[in-house]
Image 1 (cartoon, rainbow, N blue to C red):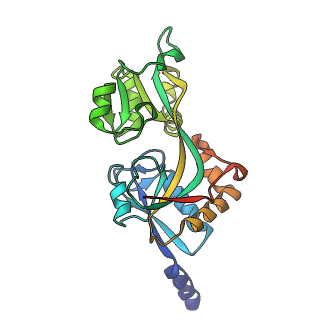
Image 2: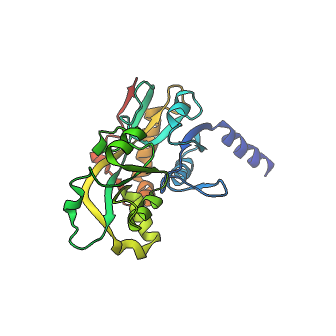
Image 3: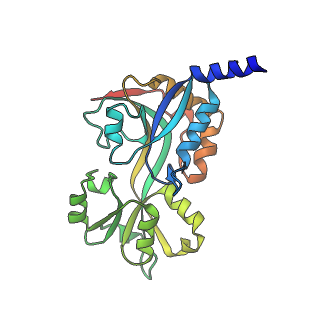
Length: 261
């Protein structure tokens, strides 16, 4: 028994620790009042740790506005659920296409004679946006002053709060990730009939993992692990309930990595 414990301890000790940045953004990362985190990222890291013993993936808290610098200075090894075009210029990394897609939708309050045409024109309406995020309608300019001055935007830190602003008439349109919207509606079914969801999509989130040079794991190896989770159904189990599309392997480019500088 003692020899077995030593063997198991030795195996765990040999695993390379990979620090993955986790910024509060439901349903991907949900931080509670007890400073514990839940959500899709912890589930993904648990699945990766179950799948193999060479690496031990650990979530390290970061913030949306700080994750760039945390990756650059090596505090975290990987930023996940990212897009290489979201302000990562000037930072070296290898990118892995995760084969996961989410989307950003426009949401307004249901009113008489209001239809999909309501989302055609954004200027002149009060927008509820998530601070620090890049939006397609604004040419991915996340500068708070630009968004507030040009689009009369209220910038918050919660999709739930932005949706409640729309329901209470304090904002005309909120932009919300599809995964968060349907998570919100599942938790608040009484609001479903009061929200008008756009057929118009602001952008498709084609999620990538960005890995810093010198990280314990290479982009190639991480892509291999993701492929194994796709093949054994773990990615679908974790992400499909939140309307996040798991792209089939034949159509996926997760084996491709590229650097940026």
